Image 1 (tube, rainbow over the protein chains, first blue to last red):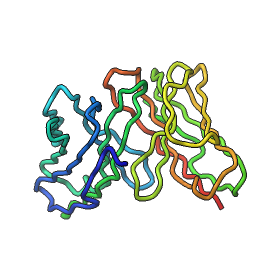
Image 2: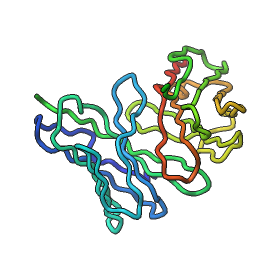
Image 3: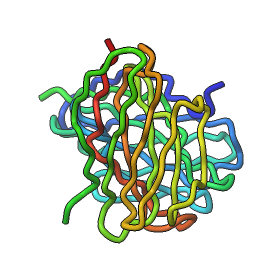
Image 4: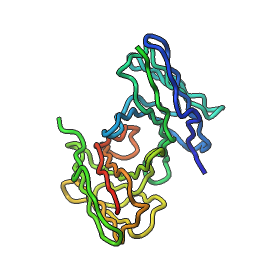
Length: 113
Length: 114
């Protein structure tokens, strides 16, 4: 039973355009959400996060939006660059006794020059 | 500043053997978590340790065990290895618990079971 879902396995965009990566979750107890980027042969790199008390968080070219009523979050990258090509994972922090992260399956983003 | 370091980077074992994976957290970080990532999936939570105590355990068999040392480094042990244990094992550290601080990952240990 997947609690965090990334329904798009892949996404291709042109350099300079906006990339929008989506994530849905089922557990309303999740209180902290994160996006990680992963290159081959490297570990996941933290990108940006958002607390459940907010609906938007920005960091440079990256913005995360949270819609709690829809249990949906999205990552916007503007403008997209070829170096952004990687697998992006959405994760949610489960507050039940530990801070275990529950991950989606990832979306492979390709930014074409 | 050094990030999360894991050793070894690659390991090849045969079925039935045991393995020990090691992790050093970012300096000052007291929480260490272990995740398993198989191809095509996101990382799956195995254990979390904070101040040398187990704070969380994922849905993995008892063949998996871990511990955290006084210097906050950690070991993951897997006994009686199965082919299905072939995966990337990731270690992550964070400053403290319940602070809404992100976990930072190492580059992992790639374990192959023959």
